[in-house]
Amino acid sequence: MGWGFVLMMSLLMGIVVAGWFWYKHKEEKKMKSGIPKGSLGWPFLGETLDFIACGYTSRPVSFMDKRKLLHGNVFKTHILGTPIIVSTDPDVNKVVLQNHGNTFVPAYPKSIRLLLGPSSILQMNGNLQKRVHALIAGFLRSPQLKTSITTNIENSVRQTLGSWQHMQLVRVQQETKKITFQVLVKVLMSVDPGEDLEFMKREFEEFIKGLICLPIKFPGTRLYKSLKAKERLVKMVEKILKERKLGMAKTGENSVVNDAVDVLLRDISEEGDDDEQGETKEKQSLPLDYMSGNIIEMMIPGEETVPMAMTLAVKFLGDSPVALHQLMEENMELKKQKMNCGEDYSWTDYLSLPFTQNVISETLRLANIINGVWRKAVKDIDIKGYLIPQGWCVLASFISVHMDEENYEHPYRFHPWRWERLGTAVNNNSFTPFGGGQRLCPGIELSRLEISIFLHHLITSYRWVAEEDHIIYFPTVRMKRKLPISVTRL
Ligand code: HEM
Image 1 (cartoon, protein in one colour):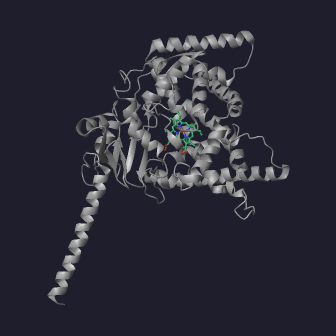
Image 2 (tube, helix red, strand yellow):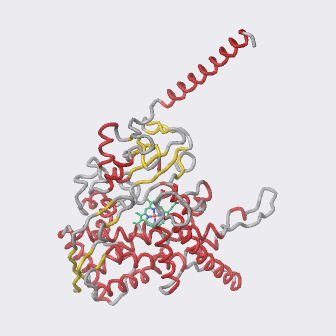
């Protein structure tokens, strides 16, 4: 090989390398901004230890606050095994929530991905996510569902509260789960209290324990046990789906939709329309495993988010006698009205109590049950001068926005009256307990209805004294002692 050849190859490589640098420089200039500042911490661990330590204090947001001061509202860090860009800026969060699918896709920790599976609505993208979301949201938000489910929620609340009079100490976090799980299973599959419900509750509790755990899968590990529980749940839900499908085939479809199973079974995709040649394509319904997977994951709010919101409302009200008194007056007034006219409550009665709704908004702001959403950028994007490069994960932190003095005066104070001024506008960038954009939680109204009914019956039938307890924020929001209270019946 002659020197000429070596020289030529070096020259060629030089040109390629220079070209690459020139291209990178041009692309970066085009972005006009840089990757957010921040530290990736220790190799492998990153800044995880500080993140977790803050999660065990009363101010989990201090992790974000420290970095905000050093690097600005959007910064990079490395937590839970992932280099990640954290946004504490409501405008950036809005863009992240709204640019779903073409720019950002969900990026949950591995244990969640494995347990929910690829058919989970939380992991779907594009048209399929839109389709399933529209189906579920259309059903959950419909006045028909709210009308029919109100009596079920009332019965479940009355039954649980009724059992409290014989209890020395009530653990609110445990008790509220009984109510919300029962209600959700009814909404999803029309299963009433009994053996099947007990079986599902047991298996579901086993399943959910693994959502945030080490992603190691062999007999004995947490993940393995949770996956096995999911298999048993899938079997049961598929049995319900098959029986219902058979029933529909025998009787012919009727238009009455009673639960989420009905909604999913009746859905036929748009592929059923005529194609370009005018021939009707085969109608496609969602595969059975998609349906069962989605039904199971929609049980999560019945075990986690809604009961936690109820529990924390009890906690915050116990610490705020003035708010408790005003809430009681408003709800007593409604109770008297209903007793005088001898009418049943309707869902609109509960949702139209203004102070009760403000108490719920303030609870959701302060509790931050879902503290943010994780996404991954599928292409480079520049938001407000911050570059988020393709492949990077982004945490749109709701908790930082909810606990920022810029957005809320005295953010750590439980102050339901602030909502008289702010209103509960869903598209307020600074109030996103239910997310936003295409993935905005379809269970907003159902959650508010359940919490309102619970608070109404609790406050008009009991007084309570809470024992010392405190909130833990990692890995999920919960009360250290499940909020023990002693109750006196009115
Ligand atoms: C206080 C109670 C609740 C809170 C705080 C809450 C919060 C959220 C949040 C933040 C998201 C967005 C996740 C993301 O963007 O990745 C979400 C999505 C979702 N929620 Fe809720 N939720 C609650 C109750 C419910 C209830 C009662 C249901 C009813 C089954 C429900 C069903 C769903 C579903 C199906 C999605 C996925 C939507 C999609 O990806 O298209 N949620 N929720």
